[in-house]
Every structure is written in C-alpha cells, then in structure tokens.
Image 1 (cartoon, rainbow, N blue to C red):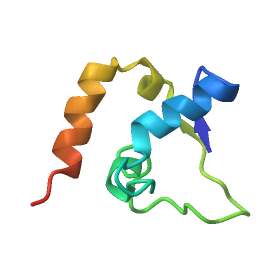
Image 2 (cartoon, rainbow, N blue to C red; image 1 turned 90 degrees about the horizontal axis):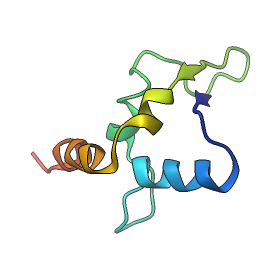
Image 3 (cartoon, one colour; image 1 turned 180 degrees about the vertical axis):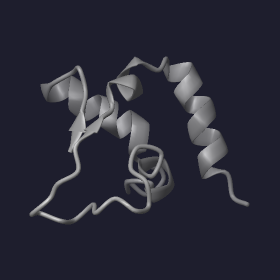
Length: 75
C-alpha cells in the first residue's frame, strides 16, 4: 500500500503519471521498484507492506519525467 497526500481522482491521475507506460498501458515494474524494493512481499495479503510515498507526489513533474526517461531507457 502506498501512502500519498492526494485522494480520489487526483490520486489516480498521479499514479498513472508516475507508473504507467503510455505505449502499452501497463505499470512499469522498474518504476514501481523505485518505491518497493525487490525484497518486499508485494502480494502477501497477510502482511501488506505500507510505504510512505508522499515524496512521490511532491516531486515536480519535470523532475519525475527525467527519472522515468532514465529508468525506462532500454539498456
């Protein structure tokens, strides 16, 4: 679970801007792993991992776009 300072439609838009790949509509695992480490149990319903991701909502869009471009660049 991600903790952000926005709710509702604004939250949905922010998450799409941060994690979704436009060309295929899927969530980028590489971008997601900026918030959750590979060791976190992402699908453990018994012990959900809550992450304070308010920083994610505070990053200016232009800065996040630089991060996205770098993370999603084909190596």
